[in-house]
Every structure is written in C-alpha cells, then in structure tokens.
Image (tube, rainbow, N blue to C red; front, side):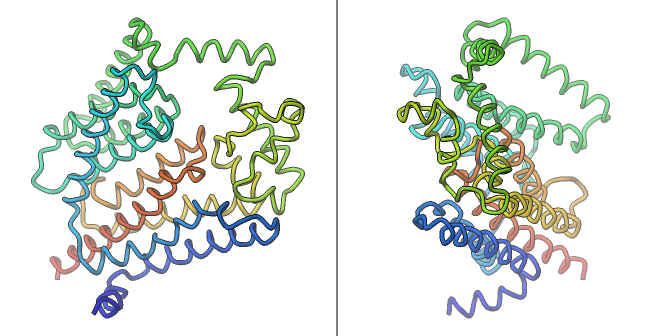
Length: 368
C-alpha cells in the first residue's frame, strides 16, 4: 500500500522530485569519490549523506498532501521554546546560550525558524499578531547566543519582509526598518550588558590583535582559515584534502605543526562554506556547493511563480529565503560540517519543495 501511494505521488511531485534526486546523487557521489581517493572512512561523509532524505521527504509530502499550517505552528512553537531555554541557560550563568550544542549553530537555526514563522503563515492568520512576536523572539534569542554571524541573514529576512509587505508605501516601510536598525545599534552600543552579550568589545579586540599579526582570536582564526583554504585549493585544485579533513590543511601552519594541542588547529572545518568545499574537494567541491544552493533556489523560484500567490509568501518563498539565509550564514560558518544544520537543510528543502508542489496543484485545480 505504501509503495503504491508513493508511486502515485511521483506524478504529482513532477520535476521537483527529479531535480532533488539528481542533486542528492551528485552530493553522495562526490562524497564517495573523496572517500575512495583518500581512503578515509565513510564517517567523514556522514553529514553529506543527509541529502539522501531530500527527495524522499518531498515525495512523502506530496503523497500525504500535508498542510503548511502545521509547519508554521511548529516554527512558532520552536521559537518560543528555544527562547525560553536560552534565557534559562543565560540566567543560569552561561556566558552564551548554546543549548548544549554550538552557539553559532543555534543562532543560525533561530534565523531559519524565523523564516518559516514569517513566510509560511497560512491564510486566515493575521500577520502583525504573530509576525511581530516571532520577530521579537528571534532577535532576543540571537542576542542571547552572542553570535554575530547570523545577523546578516537576519537583516536579509527583515529587508525582504519590508520590500514585500502589503502595508503602507515602500518608502515608509524602509524608513521604519532603518529606524528600528538604528535604535538597535544605539541600544547595543550604549547598554553595557547588551554590548557584552553580543561581544562587541571582543570584536574590537580581535581586530586590534589581527592588525598586530595575532590570529589567535575568533575573527583572526576565520581570516587565517580562509588563507589556509585558498592555499590548499591552489595546491590541490582537483581533489582537495578530502571531505571532513580540513584540519589536515591546517598543518601547513607552523603553529599547528609545532603544537599539536593548539585548539584553533582542530576546529574540524573552515568556518566558511566555499572555503570548506573548495579546500576539501577542489573545483568539484566548489561547483557542487553552487549546485547545493543554486538548484533549490532555482527550483523554489519556479514553484513560487506557479503557486498562485500575489505576494512573496508561502512555502516556495520560504524556500528561497532558507537558501539565501544559508548562503549568508555560510560566510562565517561551514553549514554542512554540523549535523544539525546539514540535516535541517536537507529536510526543510524537501518539505518546502513538496508543500510548494502541493500548493501549485491545488491552485491549478481551483482554476480549472
């Protein structure tokens, strides 16, 4: 019965399932090739294997004709729970909220939940009544994490919201957004507790140390890893050093060769998507990363055009914003070097692609 259900849903899924299936095969094949070339264990490509679920989830969503409302409810509840747990952790004495995983990863995931809460709002739900509290919860949680890497993605979310809202004039919406951003900057700079929580003083110190040639800091380590990734890419342009083995590339630094216990030599990744994929898989990795982001982006844009929506909302619009936010977060983090972010991307792209296809089919039936 289940195989028959999936087989019949295959026609409804249409091109979406085929596109995601080819993307999944490309990622898995490149991972296996890296394992074969370097004789590493399959554990090193574990995070890449998460792409296996992408087309299957899309197919199941089409088969069951799931409702967008449940995804939106889950995102709102998720934001509320994450904020509550993060606040409890910080009030309990933790310097940054990480929920026992990673503060940067937590911040990235909060932005993704916010995207779902804002762009997946179902028909009949008032935007201001739910959108503003969701945005407030997301911003507050980001402050508690002390992570700065997700702020650019957060700004992109708010900018797109301001550009696509059907309220007032565009100029008025942009002025309100600029005023809110200005107030936020003033609050962070003038309130010592906020300045400490977002590590503004630490960033200034990192820049000063970097100017003196000291890369042993949060910002300095990122710049250093970008340089290592570029040099590694030039030395191994075709194969890289192997998936999951960026630490091998760090051995070109004297400090890593002289001190095996140096912490910044064993972070496991490049803290930048393009640097990570290029250094570990060469040209193929860089092209594959473009496909990992570019193919779903192209797919969601096409699905949105056939969704019947007059505004930039719905599952396809949320899919576009998820990809954009992953790209922006990937400037300061290796998004597929962590189980949570890798699994979430593979899963949510499948879910949103399936929901977008279901929405498009409903629109076609209503027109007929």
